[in-house]
Each structure stands twice: as C-alpha cells, then as structure tokens.
Amino acid sequence: GVEFLESIRGRFVFLIQSTFAPADNLMELLLMIDAAKRASAYKVIAVIPYYGFARQDRKDKPRVAIGAKLVANMIMAAGADRVVTMDLHAAQIQGYFDIPVDHLESSAIFIPYIESLFLPNLTFAAPDVGSANRIREVASFFETDMVICDKHRKRANEIASMVVIGDVNDRDIVLIDDICDTGGTLAKSALLMKEKGARSVRAFCTHPVLSGKAYETINNSVLEELVVCDTIPLKTETEKIKVLSTDELFAVALRNAYENKSINSLFIRNRLRKSI
Image 1 (cartoon, rainbow, N blue to C red):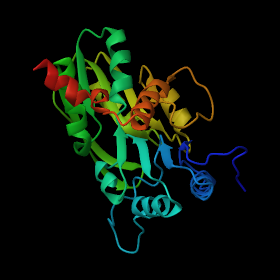
Image 2 (image 1 turned 180 degrees about the horizontal axis):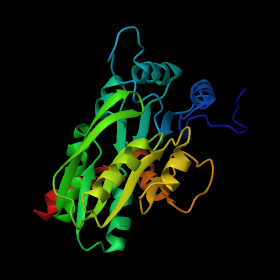
Image 3 (image 1 turned 180 degrees about the vertical axis):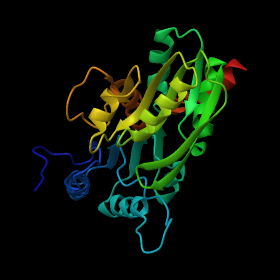
Image 4 (image 1 turned 30 degrees about the horizontal axis):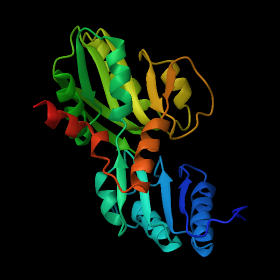
C-alpha cells in the first residue's frame, strides 16, 4: 500500500508519476491520489509526464477499449483536481477530463538544443501526416522548410511502405515525434531520407517507450542521434540516445498552477505571435 508519512491536511499536493508499463505505475498514482484526498489535502494535482494508454484514444476497430478515456475516468474518480502532462499522443484527450488539464509541449525543451546544433540547412520532418501541424509550428519558429513522411502500416508497429513528401537533398533533417516505441518508423524514415540525399538525420521524440529491439534498431540506424525527454527512464544507456531534462519546464508550470498564474509563456505558438 501507499501512505503519506506526514500531515498534508489543507495542502497543495503534487503527485508526479508517469504511467508507462507496467500498470503498477498507474495503480500507484491512483492510490496516492485517493490517499491524499482522504488525508484532507486542499488540492491534488496529478503530474503525469508520460500519459500511458494515450494511443488508445478512439475505437478504431471492433471490440477494443478506449484506454485513454478509461484512464481519465479513473484519475477523476480517484479525486484529482488537476492534471499536468506533456505531449499527449492525441491532443483531444484533454477533453476526456472534466477537470483542468495543463498540456505542456516538448518544443520548449527541444528548440534550445536544436539551436545549439547550428545546422546550416535545417529542415524539419513529420513522421506522418497526422503530426504535420505540430512540426509546422516548430518549422515556423526557425523560419525553415518541412517535409512529411507518409507511411502505410500492415499492422501495429510494422510499416508496409513509406514515401517522403518534399525535398531533402543536402538538408540537415530533424524528425520530431511524440513517442518512440520500437524505433522502426524513425529508422526507416532516416534511411529513406539519407537515400534521397539528406546530409544528416536526427530524431527528437518526447517519450522514449523503446520496447522490443528498439535500442538495437536505433543503434544500427543511420540516425546521428535520438534526442528524448526524461518522461520515461531509459532501460539502458547508449551513445546514440541523448536525454534532455523536463525539470525546469514542469517546475515553472507547477509553480504557476500553485500561484494561479498563466502558463502561456511556455508555448511556442505564443512566442511566434509576439514575433509577428
């Protein structure tokens, strides 16, 4: 079981827990929320850097669960007053909650690192059509081009075919995605773009799920590096995977939540509006 070892009566309680596998992580979060409410906490804020089950955001075939909605229901039923998370696989998951959701974006972390690389012919790549809007914002920030990788899957985590929409010849490509699972999409995208003349290919993924043979796939790929956030701890260290800290971003968001201040300044779209 779980228990608080000192009084939290009348306090703001921030519970920080990513809900990656195993499901014990989710269950522990729910128990902590329940324990905090029963201990008369004033507000309980569930801080979930990686929101597990987010890819189960709709019923895309018969007889399947909508896991993202079920998890939202459980978090609310346990008694959370607010959720703070990062880069949900589908932004509409925010609407599954009847409580406030602060949805942070990894672009605030990735952009400074990309700037430090001083890539001469920087071009951004979306790993699929669905993520194009998110990558377009980052490309607009850097005032550069973007391309799209259009893929067709045979089944989950297995790609049948892929094409690149746009010119990558002699470009330094930065692929951006929210989740790296098996690494197959990134490895295949990188290889395809190198074959089409790309000078270099790097990948930036918020959540390093890295299941199965993902580490081997990334190490054997043509990627210069895979840059991830620390929303999920790595199972093993490798030279090709660089981890960036989310500490400062979450700290600002949580402080502002505690002080009832806006978090607008943390979003790239607001910085873009100010520069126009």
